Image (cartoon, rainbow, N blue to C red; front, side):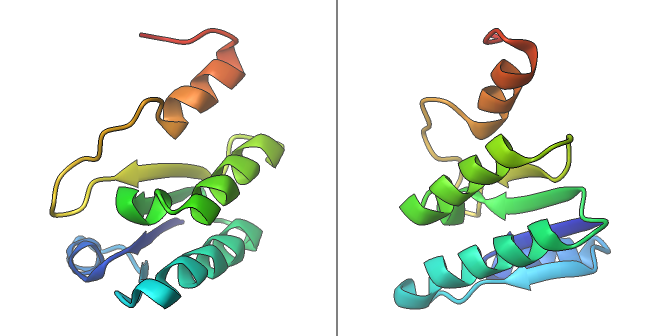
Length: 112
């Protein structure tokens, strides 16, 4: 199953594309980080979730970033794969993406 965590526009787009497990996070700054963390915890514990798509700006929150890293470091197999996508404002500047970090961990070298 594919699950999406995003803002209103991202959620609408994925629902229109036919994805059923779409979670729209509140735009309230005080609630956004906690909602995102709760959703990540829920989705990681569910059987059958193989791909979690999340907005970059949601993933950039400090506690959310730490949670994504912990999930990636502690998983026993390949799933769930967590992919960060840009929102309507465009991509964010990053030094190292989480996908690059996973590849380096799996292969042992950084790919350019």
